[in-house]
Image (cartoon, rainbow over all chains, first blue to last red):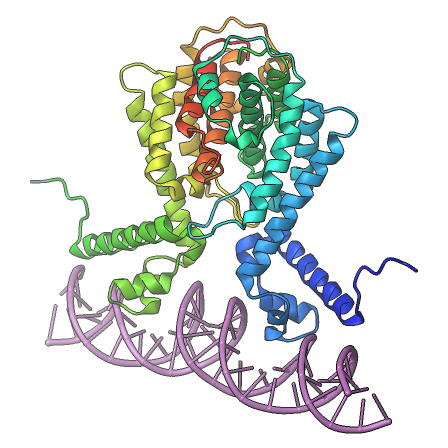
Length: 218
Length: 218
DNA sequence: AGCTTTAGTGATAACCTCTAACTAGATCGT
DNA sequence: ACGATCTAGTTAGAGGTTATCACTAAAGCT
């Protein structure tokens, strides 16, 4: 017999409706941003009226939280797929950029402007450290021969976030700069801050990546 | 006689009310984010009811646009002040970080998640290029002796955004990486992505700044 | 003094989130 | 198979928002 993904037909129906709600939410977010997400509009699109959605999500915040979780999951899966066949820093970088360009608002849902009161659910930090782990693997595989910086010394004492990964401090440093530098270029590109400047964001991204994967003394 | 900042008493009153609206808006943004800005709440706080604010701003978007403009202006002034007495890249960096930490939501108003439909007013690009000009001055003062990268070659052909600044391509490159790298660290710090990791964002910022101001081959 | 301009009002429409009470139908236990 | 239960969906409504309209009252100008 086939593996039952959802035991009862009711649960099956429920899961399907849940998925359709999320799909419409993603479409709405992609075109108008997360702040314009409207439960009412989603319900109307699905042919049911208003408060019916509260059977599936406890409210707008709950739905967005779920989307944030899915976004983290999607990024983690993309990273995992990109690191198949050898953890390579440039493969991860291109996977990251492709994933971000595929749906900019999804990227901003994770790395964009935080709403002051909001706190991400705890399980996202677990996924986030999964992402960091594959990044650390790739950075540990790089040749690291530069002189230790003061920040490397700081990392020696504060490596709890690496979650037991045996990479040397220089690799931790490299992972952090990988994250911050590529995010720097990507977020400005996605926000449109390079449009009208005439430069090609992809080449700037490539230049930063080359600096990251190349000479260690940066 | 003193220079009349506002000719008629009516204009004077209007300017004052306008300023108070903006001030309340900033308070509201600082505590709850720009998406939670409520014209109604501002009006209630000021003792007048609802639609009165439409005498001063054409609507919510118009008000936010004005705040964005003020934010750009404030950053440009901060940069200008920091570059008094010699254009120094580290002085600019510290000025930037101080300005960002002073009001994170103001930073995000400029560099945060963009709302898909919105286009910044044209005069902000003028202020933005003023900011870029002081940054270019500081970067041109750095010793630049690294080998030309492919991206430097690209910049040779796409230097219109430098607005006639005579800096060599390597300096343009440095200015761009100054912008993207520090924004990368800063935005992640302000968004709280380092909290719980145990590392000190200031030291990471300092490390990136050292790389920027130091060895050119990064 | 009288006319014009302007600040602020209340009413209203059209949205939004979210709660409460209720109905109709599917599922489950016996 | 039938009755109890559980659930998806409904309408009604409270309270919030942006924004427009028509109106009043006061200030300024000639």
